[in-house]
Image (cartoon, rainbow, N blue to C red; front, side, top):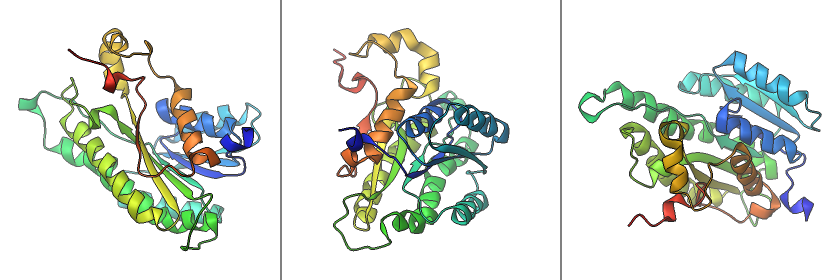
Length: 262
């Protein structure tokens, strides 16, 4: 049974893998036996601190920091080139890096749309596109199925891309709804090539900070999500147990989306 949920020997890239949800995802993969987990963002200091911390825990695999500005096309290209130098293949890509912007409707700036949609949607597509050749090599490069162990792409979406958010985060909620739809489209297109694509609809940190008690009251499980909840779900999707899941938007919210409001 343990092997069913193992990612032993796999090579993983987690964008934004040094902080918050990303930290939990990185930790989950290392605990489950991943061989190498690359973490990437533009915050070099946080990347190094996180990698040093993970590598001091005695995990079998290693955490490797790569500095990259994922909001730019050049930054994505440079990250891909660096991975291609280091690895023959990539088993799992977790698109976690994201941006948010909150402001009242009458004051919401046009610049917020460029900043948030570029990182949260456009560059997610760019990185996935550029890394597809490396992902395909994880199962030998053959585009003729069936695939028992396909490559995996996991998008970190949001419940605010499913429901109407209480906070005025217009570009963020729109970006996550777009990311969910892109997940479905890519699941169809890349699934035919041996790559599954799924998304997790999580609760964003700003929402938790703005009203933790109110949120908990609306969650059937009566608690806020923990880093291990996200990391564990990513490990499931990347293991043999999740090999047949493709195109799913998985709410990771303790049931808040299905809680009765009236």
